[in-house]
Image 1 (cartoon, rainbow, N blue to C red):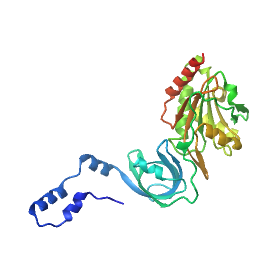
Image 2: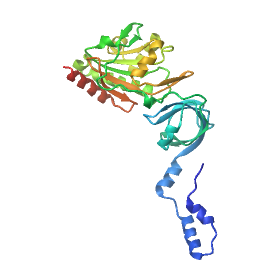
Image 3: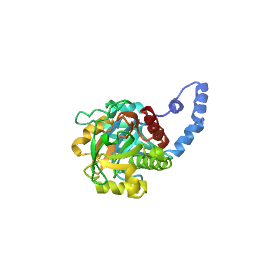
Image 4: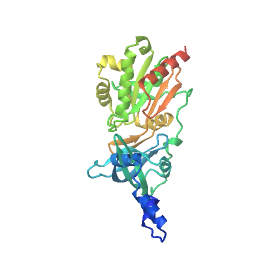
Length: 306
């Protein structure tokens, strides 16, 4: 619903007092504040209709499977911030909604979100209710198959600082998996300039799409992401996937949420630094961390355990 300023209605009111008419005329002709005018001129709005796929309270976003918007975008599932943020808590996976997509510069969000049909089934627990790993938590010995088809487990990296993150190779959202992989590539590059620290660290990108991300696919993705020769790259940075049956427990421990929607998986982001003792040293939600933050966390974890 569009809300109009009260001054507009006061302009239409009829009264017998000349003073009120003068004041009303002044109110009607008062120009909008500069900031309001600027915002209205730069922001574009498009009507959206779609279904809520997942709600991520921690990051303040909802993944929405939107129908095509003529002149703007094809049908697509992607994350949106909700304005005002308090309305995010009213949404549940499966809700059919209508809203306005607001596009201003390189930022976008949803406003005027309206639930036109509530979810038919009880929603799953929102990701904010999931337990995230805390510093000091002992990491289970999860097992994977890496880009070379070899079986690996987290225990084999004891004695090193292990930096892990979660991706899937078909991810279409630039601010999600592609960004995380670029950041890991930068970490890998920076560590090569410090051979002593590089020898005590290891990088591991874990796919939560084991059905598609086979060793061959992961190997090709790793080479594209890092731009390094295989012999150099995979000694320090591996790409791996768990067995499908082990994925739920892995995701639960690392506070990762994911939901398949055809070829697209809507998901949260989870990155962790595991100390040489196999315990969580640092955990990051989202993708706002910088490569040097993880490098410092890895160095601190190595120093703390001697």
